[in-house]
Length: 248
Figure 1 (spheres, rainbow, N blue to C red):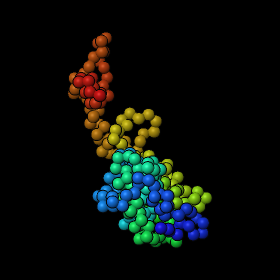
Figure 2: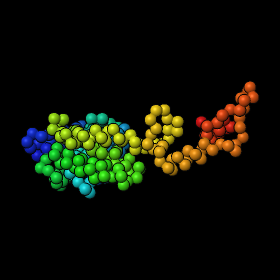
Figure 3: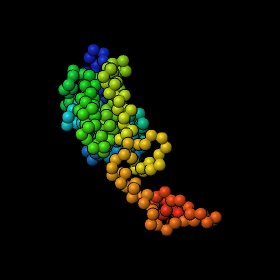
Figure 4: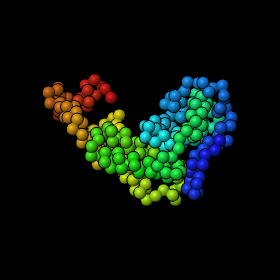
């Protein structure tokens, strides 16, 4: 099958599935077409493509063609990671994704431009202007964290669709801004309580400050003394628990 999207005017490589990829050994078995494999159930060996597929799901309603380009990029990346589909569940997953791409290649068309490179650039710019430039004043930090993650993935996909010489100045300017600011909205599993240098933006949230005050309130807890009799200072309840019970 073939697609002309992205090939007109020499602006970028075609976003269509090559004969080599569709005929790769052990990857495609027609008998597996009915396998119930969801695009979010990514095999552990291909975990790095999961964020790309999540972004595809996020943008699909607004721009199905860009969602297709994201899934195409995920498929290419998965194929490079495991070209023979030897990992557990990889063959079934890639079969599912390949068949979905075959359908979407025909069913989706650019809606903002005449070809894929211009389509994804226009969409990236619209996404930035709507969700980052305007959203930074109205959205919650957790919403902005998700938006920056989506923008980062979109730009990664964009760079596989658009030759570097064809990425326009506005797109590059937006991408640079995303790269500089995304760390302010990173998700933390462990808060940097005593970070050195510039304080992460998350530590300025009122609810985080309140939590810090609470865990640092050790005034009424029994104190610890060093061998020479001096009282050992304790910074917070976590350190107190470590000294008292050996918690890490």
